[in-house]
Image (cartoon, rainbow, N blue to C red; front, side, top):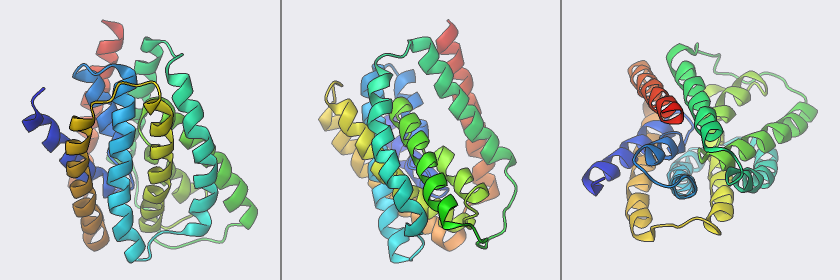
Length: 250
């Protein structure tokens, strides 16, 4: 596929997804698979670009003091352990199972974007045990799934932070980006040892991903996320879910 199509997809995916606490891997991984990348190459490239978009957005969120480090650090530690394990399992998973898992994640993400209700933008009292041990368990699961599927794990982090740890929405999205940055690069490191990576493409794509992360994070800080964007992107994810399932069963 032409870079004139690939690079704008990467830019806009990074921009839109960093607005809601993701990095772009949710689109990169299935998109790369659909256009013919080998699975290991698609997942490795997706994780790297996801990490770049997250790193770009993280710069803005830290400047605005929006990252809750007391919640994020336990998740970072355990996600760093889980991501390489998930990456190692990727090569052992049947391709049909891989596609079904990816489609399921896309479907859940679409439902979240289309039907999630507004949450109270305030913190609730949660014990430190819940924050540390609950957060640690979440981090390991997210790291494992992110490393396995090449998606970074942000799609799981934000709702779990909001509904389990009771973190305000904006803080949850910013903290998710912090966690995704580490889990993405950790998973990429595990994949890079075995995957064939086109570094010329990855470097060009990284520039687009970084730029998208900068713009998306600044939009989130100023205006949060628009309902229209969530609905449109939810529809796109559903379409990609259908395409992935079609690819799994043809």
